Length: 187
Image 1: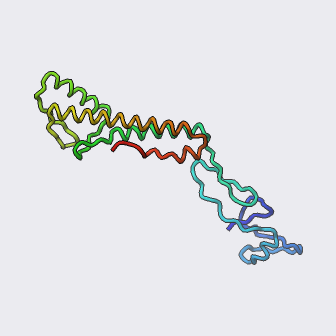
Image 2 (image 1 turned 180 degrees about the horizontal axis):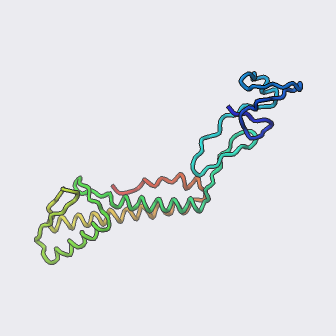
Image 3 (image 1 turned 90 degrees about the vertical axis):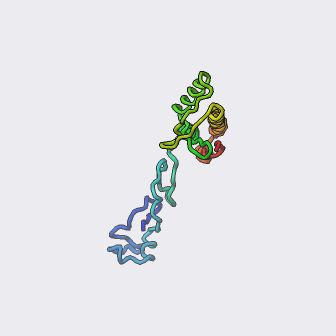
């Protein structure tokens, strides 16, 4: 337990306290609550646990937590978080229940395969959707996958644009913190 004397920063009780009568007492283990109060000490709860971006101070009567972030840094961090989450959601693509990791390399390969069908429209491609998971694709199926992938990515950007507008409309750190970046993405 910590104690504050006359609003000063809370500490442990000293070894010696002075009572209003002028008498002193030593050994905090033997002080009565009345003696502690009469000596001018007020019990204070322990300070809150330190949290990133918050400073803890004493205002004379209670603990105060102050956010140390600036609005601009918080805005920049939220935008970076949005970009990272959009990139994650872009790759989160499924076709017939099988995940196709839709990164830029996969997108390029889909486009290259479509070009290849211009030269050999009857070919069958043995596409590896996941390690050890192959699916035979004809031209129509590959076109459907490519179009579905394109639509998935387009919708990711549509949602990212809407979330960007929400972020840019925020005027306080609390408003930025309240923005949920996990909503609105295509499934």
